[in-house]
Image (tube, rainbow, N blue to C red; front, side, top):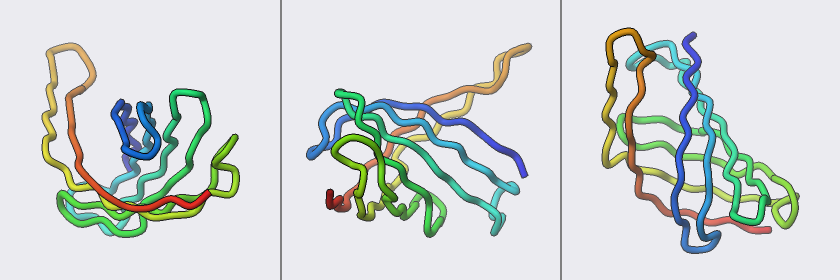
Amino acid sequence: MLPLKIEGTGIVSHIGRYDVAITWCTGGPGSPLDFLSGTITAANGDEIYFYSIHIEPLVIDYKVDGGTGRFVDADGEFTLTQTEFNIESPEGAPPSGTYANEGEGFIVY
């Protein structure tokens, strides 16, 4: 298994501006061992915890599993579709890149 760390920022209609940190454990392309889990941090510091429940190329379904502050008992689901993914591997430096997603879902808290 290869663990990867993904970080990003964005805007969600219901939450507003946020930061996200995701750990992606993968056995490689097409591996049935892929699993993602992460934390969305709202601008006020409240966190939402989530994990993957179904992964297909370019589309991932997630389950919301609680959080902190107003999201302590949060529940919900969302689907993200990858619209951009660029990996850069500069000589002598670890790989890095950019990504973009679009999605929809719901959260109850």
